[in-house]
Amino acid sequence: MQPIETAEFWQEEFEVSEEDLEALYERFVEDETPRTTGELVHQLIERRTRQAELSLRAQAEAEGIVYQPKESYEVGQRLVFVALGEDVAGEVVGVREGRNPEYGPFKVIQVKLDGNGVREFASEFPQPHILNIEDKPISVDDLYQQFGDIVRERLLEVLANNPEFVRYGDQWILKGLLPEIHVGHRNIAEAMIVVAGEALPTERLLEEIELPEDIPLETRKLALNRALEEDGRFINVGAISEPLWSLSYQREESA
Image (tube, rainbow, N blue to C red; front, side):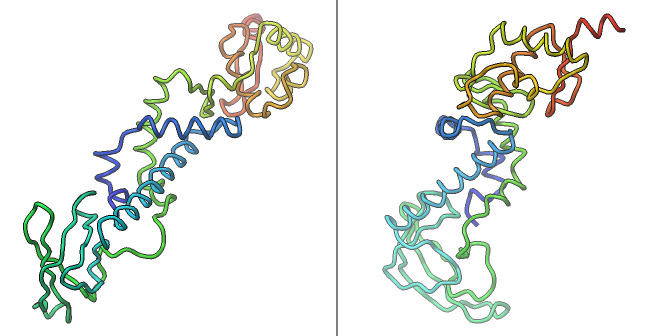
């Protein structure tokens, strides 16, 4: 098991970094499409996971072989001990037979850790062990299920304090990607609702409000939803995920 797969990492070490935000920013710029908080969390976890895998591979290539209890080692080999920290490595200086009949035949290696003296570790160990690395990659979906709530809480706090990221409901996007919704657009929306005599969904309002067609529909919807929410004439009488826009003064008159 790698450090990124542990609760200790996500609960005690993880913080949303500037690099994380830059990666989210770049993904928004690529397709100019809103994303839910869950999608952003999954993207962040995926980025950190791939980063950890690349780091582990690079460290192993630079420092030596990643220690796994199931493997066999010889004197003189350099090993990397991922479970002990990112930079813990050492050289095998001795090998002896193991002495615990409960586990069957195995060996014990003596390793001179860089700056940390000599320690012993099992090798050729026949039983399952948490430090054995399987061929399959780390599961991003599993990490999301286990630690997504932690990431969500910390990511929301950071996004809420970053003016470049804006939201409507659970949909996020970069503020700079939103088309301008000016007072003329909002006046058209008001007139449409008056003529219809009922609340209208955002997509219906966009049929008469001319916004650039090269902007994705979901982005145009988010922009209009934010603009109507900030205009006191309008009130959403539907769900936050499926807005239905009515006029607040009409509802007051009918009350």
